[in-house]
Image (tube, rainbow, N blue to C red):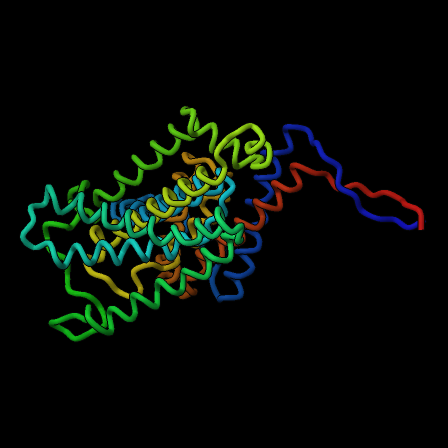
Amino acid sequence: MKPRFALRSSMPWWRGPALIAAAAIVTFLLSAIVVRWAGGAPIPAFRYMFISPLQTKFGFTESILSATPLVFTGAAVTIAFRAGYWNIGAEGQLLAGTIGATWIGIHAESLPAIIGVPLILLAGMICGALWALVPALLRTRLGIDEVVTTLLLNPIALLIISGLLNGPWRNSETGFPDSDVISKSTQLPIIWPGTRVHLGLAVGVIIIALCWWYVGKMAGGLKLRAVGMSPGAARIAGLPVERTLLVTALVSGGIAGLGGSSEVAGVAHQLTTGISSGFGYTGVIVATLAALSFIGSLCIALLFGVITVGSFSASRALQIPSTIGEFVQSVLLLTVVAALVIQKYRVVWTRGKK
């Protein structure tokens, strides 16, 4: 008899929250080890990362600002994944949105703000959707895996930005590889006086609310969820699977592109090669940790904003790498995914024949 492991489904309902709590504890323990290796004290580091940003107006508002692009990319990935379209290209779609927004921003000096602001947001959304179009067509027309095609387009978008900034869009005043500052009529207004929180946050929250309402309450959202859960069964039931996937992919790309225009028009006010610090990739983590919940993705985005600001505070105070925040986010993803797998299955020890 040879012993072996097997997976058995079902588990008492109360173990779910317990496993998530265990995942959080494991995350803290692993992060504490890394903080100690980096020469810092774990408890003060966690206090700086999770508590300090919430104790001051500046820290809180900067956390919201850091979370704003993740609100868009989290929503973009969530709606795509709910339809069974595995969009890993939110990073490239966000960058495409920054290109469209910058073009409008540097050519709209004569427009009033009431036209310039909606126009720059629309430009980012359209460019993000167009960047998502080719992988969507390859998936729906030829059956080519969108995970590969969307992922491979991400560095291409960055190369296009680099080419523009080292060529026709090079700053005309400084000669540095960044664009000219966009016109004031296209810059997003501040919605919290005395801070840097801009209109993009409100737009992102509205997008989250619309996605939640459509997917959860509308007939089209029911079809989208049906396609995501079982495309074969949806096809047999007569649902337009390919069209649903195509439209969802374009909507997902448009939301990510809207996040790009929000960064250009609300924060940087010009295009740079570092306009995104991996917002699209982090959006995948946000959506996964939120279990593809739109409201949950908003909460996770805000949590990540706090961790981002707090990690810089911990770096300055304790002389540890600021990338410790990214480590915490990654470990949290892995432990939560492991907890969800264990929640769905239980491992038992069995004996089988040789």
